[in-house]
Length: 405
Image (tube, rainbow, N blue to C red; front, side):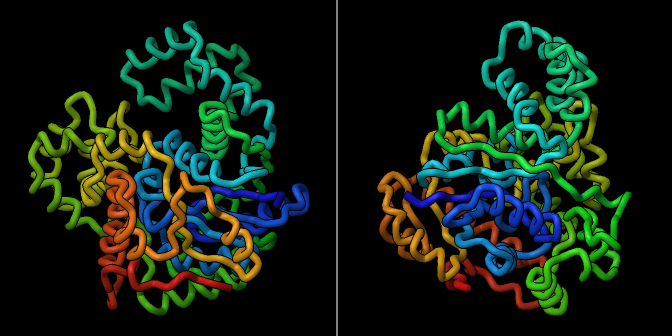
């Protein structure tokens, strides 16, 4: 049986910290194959990917992966919980998988203690959480407060719960428990420190820092592996860089103005009459920043609002998300190394359709939920290319060939 290293990532873009994580994971785990479950053209915090999914696939393969699998957009722009669960469901198609993820704390036991509480939801924790939510806090903040109170060790857990990669790691662990998965979790302490402490000499910076540098036309060559940087540079020169969601400002405002209140209410993450605030803001605001600031509150975070805005132009509803819970997702292969072809040939689990040709899948598969899911992926690509300076072709999911390196 082949031993598989799995990484779940956005690679937005693939930088030196990612390379460190991959290489250290390989050294520690010694796998036969390395696979990546990767978000496509849009990301979990409700934003665009700086490069399209095929460019990111090419970079990840050239930096050491054997297979790149797209995380369907209904998962990739969803909450951290659904993002993690969607990716873990895909990994269930493989045997002998070790999932390696980066975390700020680097301590699996600490993260697992928190995941146990979130999975089991003891009554005392539920009571505390309800009390925190009654204060009008956003769900992530209320949950953080409730966990700190329940675990009763602020010194140990406070910094853990305030860091995004710890939180995502906790969701991976929780998903493993929920799915009763055989995937083995493994964490590596992150070494990049973000934009405010950019270590150019050490060649380390976060993906957010790199995107900011690109946006300001600054050099990022030292911060990325050469293959990844060259692909990024090619996209910059070809006018195919999308810095953030504001590139779709008019499309979003137009869509929301066209939608009825009841249609907005059906979008995922719209609750408690939020549709009224969204509609009012769309009818009065002329910029995306004004729109977001008009809706944002203590209860509704910027990331949640941006996800809702993406849901609107991708027409992702509560029903779509609920349906995604009920199915085993397809395995959409974006790229494969020559070495990875052997593993790909071994993927014959009938419960998990393997897609190397979207057209063949659409012509042959009768599962309405899976078809609807991939239609959202196709729409996401079609909308994404509207952000290009030129050459913004549609239907790339049909015409782009499988990337082989």
